[in-house]
Image (tube, rainbow, N blue to C red; front, side, top):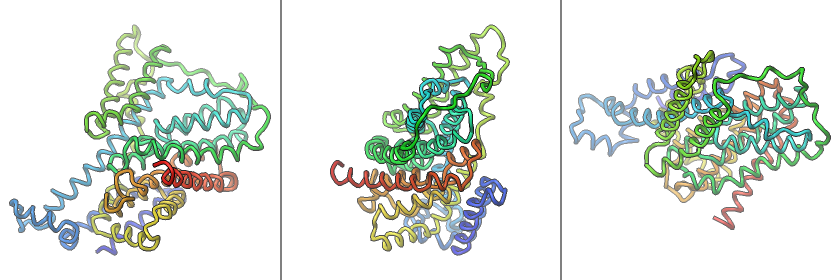
Length: 457
């Protein structure tokens, strides 16, 4: 049955990778994959439970568990519920964070970004856009940051062809910025919630490598960039958006939302509660604040920017994809295959964390980095070696490489895919202009991390 589960998982993985060719949404595949893998696992769980949970199963029987009920009841009570709980933490965190960002965006919170980066110089704009994207993506998700920055670019540069080089740097900067923050990228969020990395550990040791991963491509791209921009003229400008709130109220929404996201790691450290509880706290405060502002209006709003309405705009397809893929990986983990594969990689690479995570980084440019990181979390057990301790070299490099490696190909990250669609950038154009420098940037960041470990940490 193990072979069947592995074959089903690999087939589903291939279908997810070929989503654009097959014209089938990857979320549908992920949901089917999770159910089929668990059905196959339950059909032969008797061979896996003694192998993976022998002592716990024996203890469960000793506490009154009925052998007559078989191992299926044990799987449901002790194994499956645990995986659902771990997955739910990530799902609730993402759901709350996406809602907060949607509320801030709908109320014009990101308008200040355009004001900060506006300039006539092409080179200056490239640097401002890149750094703004880098730091914003450490707080917001990469997808939202990329959308915001593309909208800003459209307000500043008239011609699509002229915007494309800036859009390519947005992808690299967004992925690099998300790698050094515990809340900046889905894969880093997964490692942080699981306890593989800590807030200060990942920021302190990955900030400089992530910055290098962005700076190297930025220096190369800006080398021959000269002259002034072709500005968007008044005729090209769209009618300014109207908002329900006044400027001070919009600023309040922005600061509560963004500062609240930054506060989440602090909340976890102070209370010991899971991160999604901090996200729910911020969402609740933001919801109360916006309802208070609406309550003070003398006329009924003609817009639908209340939080209750904005919840319908959340990308539930993405949320369900994470649910499906994480549960599918959990089923594969329970067969013991991931652990054995992790040991195989360790033997082949002589347990070289840089080599293993580097390969994972390149692979994340081809296949989705969420199942890749989830698989790695199932392959390796926390604390077995020094590299696998909390904030160990392997976990930190995994967060870094899975994030920055997604920039090597335009289809390697959510940021790349959304920019590809918004600016109609072709795979070949990005490959010829950005793939090599993105790879060089990732490797340069790994060298920087190695030097940090050698001389500083």
